[in-house]
Image (cartoon, helix red, strand yellow):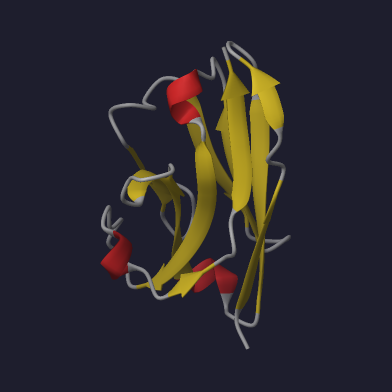
Length: 124
């Protein structure tokens, strides 16, 4: 059974930093593209970042480019999202997701497995 468990979300002030983690089990982690998505109240789930099997390729939404960094540790079956210079607009539930194949999909439908999410709240 595949499980993705996010952690690290909390309340933070504008300009602050957070690192989210997503621990995976039940799959061959190093064979999966991993992605981060977020969903704010009343809005659709949106792409944040994705990373290839080896970590050599990454993709970011324009809204987070230069502020967020996705990385992975295949030995620990964990993907990370380092978030810097946080803004109130970053407030959302953050989800990690996994997909087979090599493409760094930016659509939610491109991912097979999902975590339960972790809440990030940025206060102004």
